[in-house]
Length: 255
Ligand SMILES: Nc1ncnc2c1ncn2[C@@H]1O[C@H](COP(=O)(O)OP(=O)(O)OP(=O)(O)O)[C@@H](O)[C@H]1O
Ligand SMILES: [Mg+2]
Image (tube, rainbow, N blue to C red; front, side):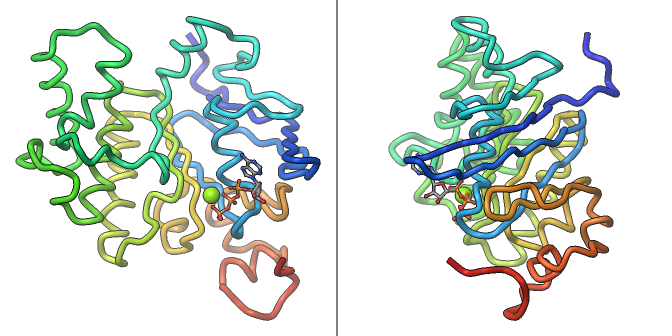
């Protein structure tokens, strides 16, 4: 059993090169068990790449990720599959399949990873739909839902396999401010109720300070600062301050 005080994920000197271009440059930080950890930064600074590397979907060029103290790249085959099952993904691009009902979408990862009876899988999916407040919408097609409801269905799918860590890439992108707050609250509730660890990529500042226990700020592929939400708010780094305030004038260079 891992020691609860040890980090659940440890990001160690991660570098990622795409087409000869350094996209992540020597990034290191730890994620603690049970926290909401936010990765923020400007467009194209490497947030999604970082998240995918942490979730084991993309290989870093160098450096390693320790999951419960174990180097993820050293885990192969079946064991790697098992390990990745302990992660839930809510990626912006991984939208719901529009020809399946909400419940069928949530059932997908359970069907893929288990041989459970369809009736049991359906009950599991419905439990998750209840958790995200979508009871009664199991048989709807995604097209019949609002944007916020689709995001919630996506969250239900991300937690379908009772993961230890859920990764979210821009979970509130394109939502109005109220729905955005609802989704943020849901991320907080799920994290606390299910005792999971949530790792969230966002550049929505309101979301950051609503949900984050701790925040890592990436800038041009480097880790600029990591700290509690309060520490980031009070940061003396002018780039962090310009980003938080969304100011036009400051050190941030536009590419
Ligand atoms: N599969 C890939 N092949 C080549 N280049 C890539 C690939 N994925 C990402 N990149 C490049 O790496 C850089 C970082 O991309 P990434 O998607 O991680 O940024 P991001 O911070 O998530 O941006 P956004 O806020 O726009 O979502 C970008 O310049 C992007 O073009
Ligand atoms: Mg991205």
